[in-house]
Length: 376
Image (cartoon, rainbow, N blue to C red; front, side, top):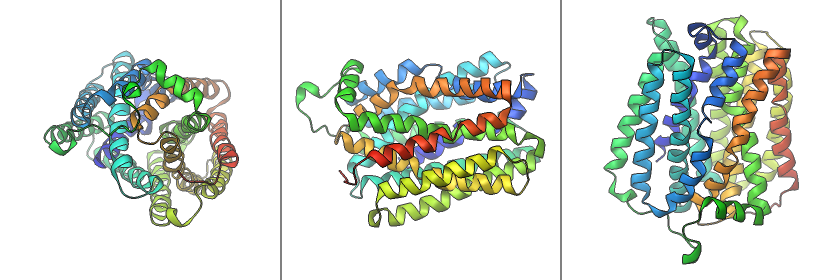
């Protein structure tokens, strides 16, 4: 299950990290390409939430297998796309496939592991960070041998296909995550999921915070790549590696120390660091300062997903599929953000789009400030 976030980040990171190259290959404006790539991931945004709510009815084994198989097919399709429409369709299919596969993996691990939710989520996020780290390595290797972003998609698709086969053979995943609630609520519809969300202010607040977290992953990478395009492919690769490296260091610390510190205080500190680093990144094109700023953003923001998502799971214990269904219902906000940022980049330049991303750590910090210190 820990391999799922690795594969997801590997596959989903190819296009954003290659945004300038894809723009050249497909003869598109760089700024709008960066925004369009991220938006395309959310092309089937209305599909994911009902699928996640329905997933409580089936075994984790087959839901995960089907999701990973769809992920593999869509990724291989992207590798052979001849135009922007074909690429957008493949990325749109990828979105719910990746979301469902990651949701079931998180649900099984968080609800079955003996460690705290925060520590388990830190381990999941660390696996995802290793997938992020593989992206520049794969792209650099293929660039060195004369290949490009298409070859990266092929590798990601093949890895996802192998993992789908592995999950199909994993009989220990046959059972679904146990449900603690009564039978009448055991299989919620999307409408019921939204009703639960509106009735749980904590779940709703942390779910909205999760939307902000997503802005500092592929969205940040895509617009930072365009912002730093003038520094060349090597510096961009170094900057991306610095972003991932900072995240790995912070996640390793979080996984070891989270049970000894206050998650709320960690979020308050890291959101402040992330906000300052984003401001610096938006104002520089220096080949040293830019990677340093990205390293700080990567380190600070890497704590957001495990801590925010752990609080969301804690808001509705024993119902991870429903928690993820609520998050899925908010995905339209994820889809809208890259379009807005793409328009900002087109009108005011990519630096302005990067600067706008400061709202993410500020919003998450506000959620942490208003939250209770208690762990569930």
